[in-house]
Image (cartoon, rainbow, N blue to C red):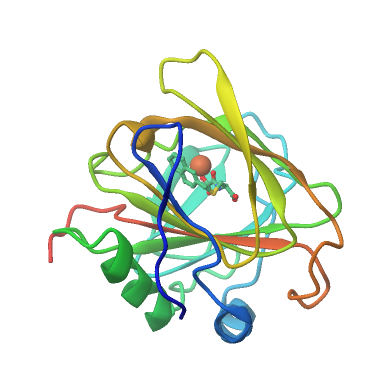
Length: 209
Ligand code: MD3
Ligand code: FE
């Protein structure tokens, strides 16, 4: 891992560390992710309204975020295999300590895979028990145009997230509206089969360390 270089952005509480993971750290992390995806295959969730997501998902850790006709929630098992989610890659827990740290430890890592025009509409993340705990996001593979704006609405800011970038959502940014407008397909060769992987670490449940 290279030295951590933080860049403040216009959104209060949104912290970005561009290029924190070097090429070899990115490749190692992709290996760790794909190994775990053999036990917890990517699947395409449905919205509570019954529309399929364009993004494919899985999770690591004690809890995983799922969506289906029953709504959005965190649960301990994969919705298709019924098995517990694999463990969170230890390097991600180290990254959490080195960036956001604090009293909470992440107990959920959502895996998003963007291929073939997949995107994610503007939304807020509020299914976690403690909305004061930060979220940490790691981008791998193809670059993406990320959009973020205040919780209350109003104007949004677009920025590019590249492979190896890490961002944290803390304080007022924790409830920010955000989404992925588009992925710059073919901008990276990191991911087997192509595309963009995003890993988000969250403190989803109620346990303190
Ligand atoms: C701002 N993921 O998984 S990462 C998500 O690239 C999600 O897959 C996007 O939005 C992705 O919920 C964006 C950056 C990110 C992640 C979590 C946030 C931004 C956030 C939580 C609160 C506010
Ligand atoms: Fe989100």
